[in-house]
Length: 345
Image 1 (tube, one colour):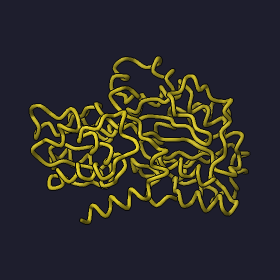
Image 2 (cartoon, helix red, strand yellow; image 1 turned 60 degrees about the vertical axis):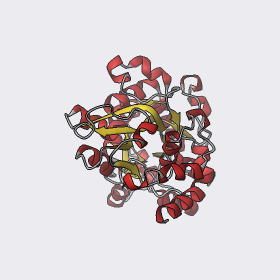
Image 3 (cartoon, rainbow, N blue to C red; image 1 turned 180 degrees about the horizontal axis):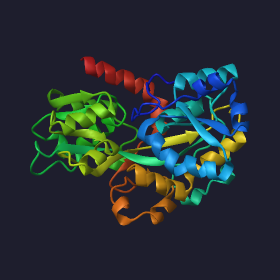
Image 4 (tube, rainbow, N blue to C red; image 1 turned 30 degrees about the vertical axis):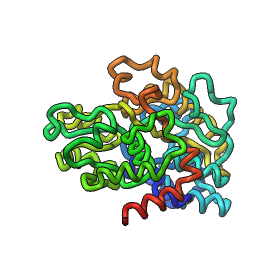
């Protein structure tokens, strides 16, 4: 894996029960599992996987009679399986900025383009070896007890805030918002001016409280350990609804996505093509959005959702910018090294 990335799933959910354990217990190969009515999908687990079960896996079971058994989506394991010619997974889900790296490394099968309605998908979501399935937002959030008036509505206002600012201790997404805070327009973000972004971060370095995991970042905001900061909308949406003193805005968000793909040499590749196609359909993505506040990659899903749900979903627009995964796949390692040197300066 490109050393610029260290995690397969940026939102760091804990994986559920593993298919490897099931295979060990039953003595069945992945192909035999499918013949027995089971397939294997590597996911990030947790709430994301729960939403997949409700929106996609249950429909797949009704259509085919095949259960989806999940395992942890470890990138190193994917590479080892493919290189050894012993692929066990049928489908994988991961952060798009990492899945594109796997595609470049030759670890993924080509998708059957005939199974996708490109006209219904947002531009840039359908790739040769993977498909984006949702949009989450790296956005501005604040503690309402600490910031009682005029909360920041853009990154420039966040930088100007008199108080502690929580940011992800990683370059991607963080450098993007640092440039927005310095006056760069959304449309002009890429290619990133890394040195300008670091100079922007220099201006608030004494105020930054770094977080490494999404849960940690959200807790800093909820507990009032910081005044405001950056976090993914899914981390603060439910706490806000539950009465936690936290709020957020989607303005100037950086949109990030999960992607589905088929590992090279997948034992049940034909069925996997159908499962990936099902996950991209409007009905499945609309149902998914009812369980997690992530916008659909299929535009048709929006017509199936009520206004109260659509109002909180990140959607591509002139007020946000989709993460340029091509840029990060090419430059991730070098930019990560530069960012780490800046941290130590």
